[in-house]
Image 1 (cartoon, rainbow, N blue to C red):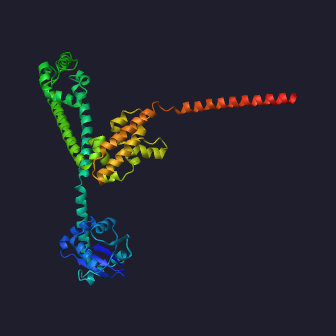
Image 2: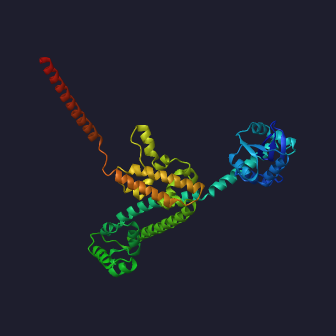
Image 3: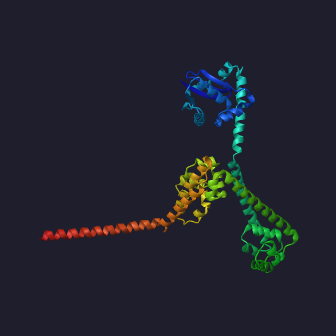
Length: 423
């Protein structure tokens, strides 16, 4: 005899092959129904479920039919039942179609309006719990943090460009001398007027060497920039100070991402670093989503526009997306970047799956394997591939040589025939 197990808003039910109740465990408190159903959907065996299974076992039923594969696996581990999976099951369809009639026969509901109202309340509570659970996922926090870092980077690039142009009116030589944006903004907020760029202050405050400090001080003395008043300098210095604060905020977020990635995706972090790993998770929509993507998709994550443009116009498809930021790819020879990106995406795909489903640390082994692949590619493809024009030219030359050889053979054969004819 096969018994179908079906949880619903009234409790946990077991039905025989005719759709009749074989055994049941009703939920006592209505306030706990949403929590219990959420636990069942999360493949947990709640007390009512265990009681029902024990009751079925006492009645000497050995075979069960369930609609959830993972829940079936959980039952299999704790109870010795033969289990079939069918979704949706024939009995399940019948029961769900007449759920109100079932509740009315058990005196759970009196009217259909009461049933509909209760069903709506339970569904709303279940949805809230699922949304809350989804928002509590650490990878979602990482996504928000890395997107905030990218937003700060955009703002800082605009800030720095504006500050270099603005301060360049007073001290234009500093722009070429100081390439680092953070240092440039710190100098402006700390010193302001170019007359304040003294050697001693530069060595003490900025920890510069004597040579560097003397050079900046000399540039300040001989600057061709215009003189400005203190009223003009104050907003400029305030602007620079805000930029420095933003850089500090970015560093704080980067540190948080590094710590969070160590918990959520240690293998991705170990392979390509915390920031790039976080960007891959952000582009995919989560660690589980990234783990479910094939390596070919991981390879072009972040290059969706170029990919769809190639599909639309027939242009060459992109060879890499976000993973181009990884040093071995962007430092590689141009004709090897696509091959290295493909190998890297393959290993990253494995790392994401291990992070999502296992948690075991295998980044070092994956990285060693990837490095050996990269070395093999560098050894195999030392020279760049020939251009299309060169290949066509070579083919034409080869064809000419072949034709020449054939003509010679034909001429020789003709001469032999002529000699034989004369004889």
